[in-house]
Structures are given as C-alpha cells and as structure tokens.
Image (cartoon, rainbow, N blue to C red):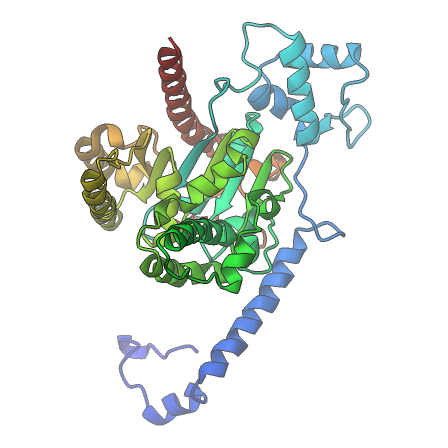
Length: 463
Ligand SMILES: Nc1ncnc2c1ncn2[C@@H]1O[C@H](COP(=O)(O)OP(=O)(O)O)[C@@H](O)[C@H]1O
Ligand SMILES: [Mg+2]
C-alpha cells in the first residue's frame, strides 16, 4: 500500500483505525502456520526443481581447458593439449562449437589429474597431500550467531577441497538443512541424519551399563524401540552421494532438531554417557575417517547438543564472523560460552577420573580460527584491524570479501565454484573466485600443518 506523504508527514501519522481494521484480515490460529508452511513448501519445490535434470537430480557444470589449467592442474594449456592428443584413452572433453573450447566433467578432471600425477613431473604436486596412515581431519564451522557465513564458508571449503582432489564428506547438523539443499540432499526423516549415530552411541552405553547392572544383580533398563533400531544403524547408510563426484553428504532436515530434546533425556537416564563423543566416535567407528580426507561439519546457529558434538569431534574449528561491532561482540560471547561449556564438561568428568585414578579429560583442537566473512574493505578496514589486534593469530589473516557472485544467485542455491564463469564479466569472476580460493588456502595451511604435526608425532612415537 502506498502511503500518502504529502506535506512531508511521516508515514505513521494519521493512520485510520477503521482502514487498519479493514486491511488486517482474520486472526491466525495454529492451523494458519500449517497453511503458510505448505505455501512455502510448494514455492520451494518449484524453485528447487528449476535447476534440476529431468530425472530430478542436480548436476554439476563442466570445466574448460582454461579453467583446468588455470585453477586445477598445474600444467600449461599447450602441454595439456599435447598430452591428451598423445593419450587417446584419456577423456578428450567435448566442445559446443567446431574447434571451440573443450569442456570436461569433474570426474574427467579427476582422472586427468591422476594421469598427470602418475606420468607428469615429480616436482609438481598434482595430488593434494595427506600423510599416510593418518585419519581424515574433521572441520567444524560454528558460531551461535546466524547469517555470519557458516554454511557458505563450509560449502565453499568443501567444494574447493574437492576441486583440489580431496575426498570430502559434508555433515549437516543444522535442522534448517541449508547445506543439504546446496548439495541437493534428500532427507525423509531424522533416521537419514546423524540422529541414529547419536542414538546408537547412547544405546551402546546403556547396554554396557545393563551388563554391569546384571553383574550386581540389579534389573537392567529396557532399550526402547528407538534405541533398539539405532543399534542397527551404520554411518555408511546415512551417507548420500551429491552432484559432486568426490563430495558425499550426511544431510539434515527439521526432525533433527528433536535431538536437542532427546539427548538431555538420555543423559539424565545414563549419567555416565559421554554425549559429546557420540558424533566423533560414530564417524570413526564406521571407518569414515579412512574413507574421506576431510569431513566438514556445518552447525546450527546455537550452542546446543548437536553443535557441542560437532565441536568435540572437530580437529579444526572455524568461526566465521563479519567485521561489524555486533558480530565481533556476539562472537566474543560465543567463545565465552565455548569456554564455560567445555570447562564444565572437563570439570565434571575429571572429578570422577581423579577419584578413580583415571586419565583426565582435556579437549584439544589442532587449530581454532575466527574468519572474517562478507568483508567490505571500503567500510570495515578499521574495525577489521582492531579485531586483528585483539585476536592476533586466532583471526585468520585472509578476509573473505563480500562478493555479488554468491547469495543472490536467485532461484538456485549456488556457490562460486558451481557458477559458469561465462555468465560473469571475467574480472568480476576472477576477483570473486580469488577471495574464496584464499579462504581455502588459509584453511589448507592449517590442515597440512596439523597433519604434519600428527605425522611427526607418530614417527617419534614409533622410534
Ligand atoms: N562472502 C560473501 N559475500 C556475499 N554474501 C555472502 C558471503 N558469505 C555469505 N554470504 C551471504 O550471507 C548470508 C548468510 O550466509 P550463511 O552462510 O547462510 O550464514 P550462516 O550459515 O552463518 O547462517 C547468505 O545469504 C549468504 O549467501
Ligand atoms: Mg547456516
């Protein structure tokens, strides 16, 4: 409705109660929420369907010779073409026009990279480094403030790492399921999320307790249907492939939120249950730390039980925040909450541990870094410099620029790495991509440094 602004009157003057009543509509009841939700769902399906293939699956774009030799495999274009010509068995790509640029699927890029790694110069690293015998690194992206760039950062890091040649698993702990949407995941209910892994961890704890109860001549606590079902769960059954050949997903949807109510109930029943270990131990027990190189965990904007599990499982913690006073302020509070949460877990555990003469619990992370996201150098340089001076090494040196390439991609959820550079001015594309490449490079330094530390420690232990 257009407000009459004649005479410069503010829009909230002269509102007529009768006209307001007429515009108001009928009161909303609980069923009203249901109707609104259904309308949103229909719209969502419409939008989500637009980017899909006929079989309802999402597909990844192709990669050109220019992009491959510029960003993905360290070879000159001429050499790349010669090697392809000399090896007709290698993927040859396809072109849209006679003699036009050649385009490859990511699967083909991965095969080409493996070929160059086997045949090419030993001096170049065609394959990304991971020390032999060391498990995958788990990376949690967390901040209890919403909208700071957690999901964007985690998704782009996952895609960068996949383009770099790592095998990536993405775990969505946010029941809003944004990460799941980005990767086109289909999740029917909580049984296709991490929920069964958490439930299984508690069920196994309860079984152990019951054995001790029987030994003492006490009655065991019965396992309910949920827990009995959870004992059959396997992490590999929860993992779904995505449109990226080397990114898999454990998705989330609304029902996962139930875990926030269920976990404390279990904890009251089983006081000795180490609830914070449930996710990490679940992923480890089912061999996912061998099957993947990096596991990215996207967390909800809250420090609930799911986030605590993600953080406790993590080797590397990234905390995105914008260079604004409010985000700096609330991120400080987030670190304060992390401190008190993990300190209180350690304290409670260690009282028992000391009494029993057992080793004490002490959480440790390879690296914890705050990452500035959506950075605007024109407006935020001063605040960013102030944050840098107070946070020191904890603040990652690279500031991820605000870029118009993401976020407003319209009807499809898309990352920079999924966008076709021909849709943009090449300069705009290169700048937008560069800032996310730098975000990845800063992360990769942490990853390789942490893996090297583990490798050296393992070597020393073996001597
Ligand atoms: N570097 C960036 N440039 C521009 N927009 C961004 C950038 N990073 C994130 N955004 C946008 O900011 C919004 C919030 O990001 P999101 O990753 O969903 O945050 P969170 O997961 O913390 O709630 C989204 O609309 C996203 O597209
Ligand atoms: Mg998010």
